Image 1 (cartoon, rainbow, N blue to C red):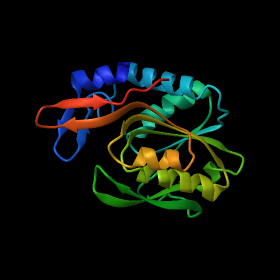
Image 2 (cartoon, rainbow, N blue to C red):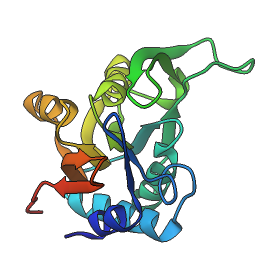
Image 3 (cartoon, one colour):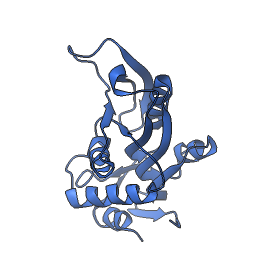
Image 4 (tube, one colour):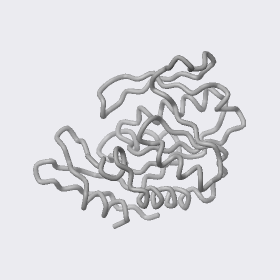
Length: 195
């Protein structure tokens, strides 16, 4: 069992609707020690990959992406879900359905922050149906860049996102892959991974 599986079992809560609540250390309150471990493990798994940019989507992926970007010493870009008065007009735009929020989001990155010369490591906290990651891939492709890999903290293996991305040929590394969860018994079963 790895460090993140242990943390999920000790502090995570399974909610109805296939929801894993780990906001006490990952996506509301941030446990810096766990973030360091996640970033280090993703860097280790992608040690053979040349990366010059890390890309995530707001909001929960930003902490992990920042730590990973720090290890690579490269810029971190996050796709925004809402436009503000100072949003650039010149931007790449894609669409992603949020499994957690049950809504469709337009996501965008201003064009000066993604280029055709970029080798991008996409990083996020959760992977469920893969909508957010596919939107990020689309943004990289719009810029003419290359997706060097996809690093995920928690993949819901019982949902289609991970299998689709692997079938599409992307290198996907998930620190934890959940095979099944039961909110009534609060049990979680993880996929065995040899890494």
